[in-house]
Length: 191
Ligand code: AMP
Image (cartoon, rainbow, N blue to C red; front, side, top):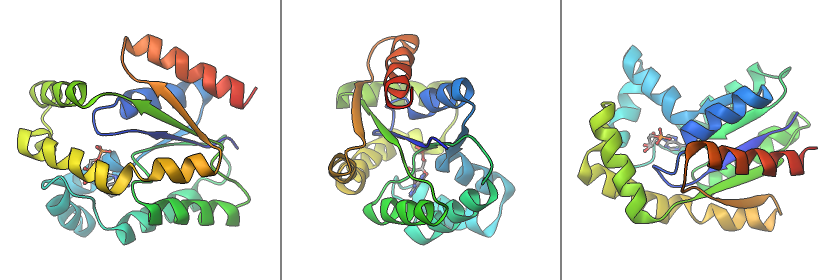
């Protein structure tokens, strides 16, 4: 198995690039944001409680995410690997991911961090608000999501760096060019 984390702030292009990587390398794409939005659409208990946090631009509590993650890893034992998109977002989530993976005899092999400046992130998220309706792409929520990222998620860069798994890639330019850079890093790490 080859497991990748696509890391970056909201608007960095994690979803787009994760989808492309998953297709190219036949990996399972796990977007925790998508999973939560699906729960909201279904009107499940999980969806109802997650929505309150998501609409405010805050993180959904770790326990809820950890539960989803454990189930997904256990249910997908016989695949080529995972592309994690939007998980982990806190140190606890990262530690649990490592712990669950070790139990399964696997690990995160590579963390690709998409680097995009703040101005570009805000522009992209505001544009997305016009193109596809996402209730958390409103200006005040965008601002809060970026604050949440800096406070709770960005510190994970250090965690991955210490593990020697972190590779940063400039996330600005054409979608194809960024994908090429990511593919190169994957091919280097996993020839
Ligand atoms: P995303 O689609 O990845 O931008 O996620 C949308 C929202 O879902 C985030 O702003 C969070 O409120 C919530 N969310 C997604 N993934 C996680 C996670 N790993 N931990 C906590 N909250 C999450």
